[in-house]
Each structure stands twice: as C-alpha cells, then as structure tokens.
Image (cartoon, rainbow, N blue to C red; front, side):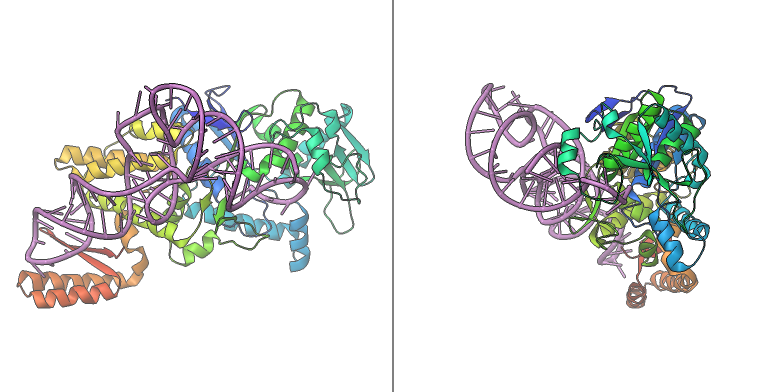
Length: 458
RNA sequence: GGCCUCGUGGCGGAGUGGCGACGCAGCGGACUGCAAAUCCGCGAACCCCGGUUCAAUUCCGGGCGAGGCCUCCA
C-alpha cells in the first residue's frame, strides 16, 4: 500500500518513502504542560495517532518510532508555579497525567517515546554550542540567539522571505538581539527561575531548541515525518529547521505535516480567546471518548473543523449505527482479518479519514446484510479490523449503548422482561405502556423473534 | 500591509475535466401487533463573473465572502 502525504515543505502530496523501512521515525510537537489541553489541542495527537496506526500497519509495529514531547519548561509554566505556589514539577506532572488520561479516553495510543524538555537540556546545550562554533548563533547578555541572517534558506517552510520578515517584524525593544527576527536559543538565568549551567552561561532553553535537540537525541535526524498544528509552521518549525540544519548540515525532517484548526463559530479555538472546551468537560457532559474522536476525524486533517454539539450528535448517531452492527454480530466468532484494502487505501491517501469512514459505512451495511455464519464472521472481522486502524469501535457494543445507565441497568432489564411477558400474553396495552415508561428514561426497546433488547435512545 | 488556506445539498463532509461519495436529518417501501433497529429506494449542492475546452463544481483570471500566520499559540 503506497502512502501519500502532503508535505508542507513542497505544498504537495508526495509518495511517502521512509529512509529505512525497518525504522520509521515520526515526531509530533506535544503539549506545554502548564494547563489543561482543550479539544483543539487534541486534534494533532488524534490525527497523528491515525498516522501512527497506519505506519505500524504498513511497516510493522516495531518498525515505527513515534516521539511526542512534553514542553515542561517555559514562561507559562514558571508563572503557573508562582501563582499556585507549588514547585514547577508539581505543575507539570499533574498536567501530564491529566493529558495522558484525556488522550487515553480518545483512544490515542501511547507514543513510543515521550521525552521531557527538562530531561534533555544537555542535548540542547550541545546543539547551541555547535551553532555558536559555526557562527550561526551569538552570545549577548540576555542569552544566546540564532542569527537568521546567517541562514540562507531561512523561511523555506513558511514561504516567507527575510524581507517579508523584516517588514512584518514586531517591535520589542527589550532584547539585545542583533536582528528582530533572531530568536532565543538560551535565556540567561533570572532570579527565581530554574536554570541550568552551560558553557555560555547559566540559563534555560528557548522554546524551539528543545524539539531540535530531542529529535536528535531520541530519533536522530533526518526523521521521516514531523507533525504539528498549522500555527506551528511559523515560527516554531521554521526555527527548528534553521537550528537543526545549521547545526547538522542535513535536513531535519523529510516530510512536514500540519493539521488545520478547530474553530468555534468559525473562529480559531484558543486559550487566549477563551472559546475553548476540554475533552474532560465533554466527557463529563456524557459524550463518549470515541464520539469525540469520531468528530475529530470526520473532516480531513488539513481542513478547518467547526466544533459544536451538532457535530457531536451526528458523530454519536453515526457510531450508533456502526456499533449496532457489531452488537448484532456479537455472537459471531471473531475471525482474524486485515483491514479491507479500500479502507486502507483511503487512509493511505493523505490520511483521508472522511473517505475511510465512508468505507467503514459500507462495511457496516454488508455486516447488517450478512446472513450466513461464515459471512457474518468475516463481516465482523473486517469491520473491527478497519475500526482498529482508526481507533474506533474499540468498546464492547453493549457497553457502548448502556454506559450512561450504570446501576439503573438492572432495573431496566426487569422492566424489559415484564414487557416481554406482556407481549407473550398479547397484552399490547401493557407492553406499550412499559415501552413508554422506558422511553421516558431514555431507553429504546427493540423486539425481535429471539426476544427484546434495549439501548440508549439516539 | 505581506504571506497562506478555504467557499459542495437542511446539516457534517469527500472527490472529480464528462457518469455528482458517505454520514446525520427528511420522505416512501419492506419488516413489526404497533414501534424501534435493519434493509431497499427517493428528493436535495458544487459563492458570483469571465476565460480555456466538445464538455468545468473540478483548470486559469477577476470579484465577493470566511478564516489563519506575521515570533504566546495545536
């Protein structure tokens, strides 16, 4: 199966060919752990989780190395630590834990590697020293800066010329950097802030250097794929490229991928605007993790996606149909199967999840039409194998429909049993009364020749 | 101001130089004691104006509209 991916560097869809098919490397910029992640922050981990699953399917589980970092040192974290009066590590570890829990609820697989910035400072210092040696960086009292003028192809990712940057540069007169577009590799220590010893003076790392250093340390450049949100193209990824390529003399990553934004009322979801909702809140409202995941995957990763309850409702209804098929086949033996080719082909075409979902829908229809045991076993296996590749249909189908009832389930079972008895006695007035009573509790009853089942009303 | 996306049916959302996915909702039919679920079927769209072409929603130009980036940002 040939995978094609849109490369931000060339703005084209290209055939993906890893340097080494036995060691496929991918790095995605992870969270800055100062504060809970919102649903927009969850889009990259979910999107690249699908890519991770596809790569593992294609090259083998052990062949894919996926690193997603934790930025656990920066201004916001320091501020949060001061405001809450707790050590920095307490802030970062708590946020990390919550992040892991939220991602788990969205069926995001744990990446192969999860490096922390604070545990890789020596690697950052090494890169900075190399840049100073090469004349690509300079030391001034406020820190060490990368000299953009020293980098001839600076701007190649974002498509900005150095002239554009000068024209649009914001003025912030506090720095002693030589050019407004130069950026900090290292910030000289300040009282009350964490700092590390370094040959060019004690201090703490700038934002961009951690990814450059951790990629080198954990994976080794060039890596095959580097991903993140579209807002990271400039300056973050542009600067990573500048640093790494100036230091090492070869490309940092061969394919750069960027996901589009989640919006609320067409406006970018962002903490600074305040129009955010978190996975935690959605789960507390009763939405299931897979519903959230489905909603995130219902649009192509590069397209903007407007987040609202209707999107979630449609996602849940769509999943209900799929889980209905799985439930109907719950007694069919689970055959082993590869995900169907058309489904994989959709994903291989630049992660076209809407097309993949359309294939999934076709599998549901054929599962619902299957009659013979062998067909049913095959249909069930195909459906579940396809679902697994996008991280959907991972729950027990009965649990899917009944999760919201908890301890009430036993009572509902009893009412349904009463209704079955009434129907057997052809007491339809009573059976209809019971159905209405169940409906009021949000329960839908389904009768069949073999008895009655129930589930949450759609 | 510079750079970059995008504009598809009631809603979500793929895709394509000619036969206009898929899902949600709606309508009709089958099934059902009646329903629900399921299946079968139906209606319904390519922002506007030019151009290229036998043929454009798809390519090119212009316009209008929406959004993003320009060193906090997924």
